[in-house]
Image (cartoon, rainbow, N blue to C red; front, side, top):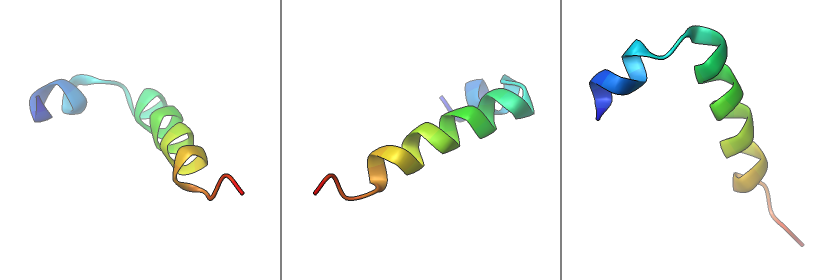
Length: 28
């Protein structure tokens, strides 16, 4: 699974990071 993430382009990784950050933020 980790290899798949490494294969993904840098901009894709950054996009996913941003989405995860939004979900991580409190939804209050």
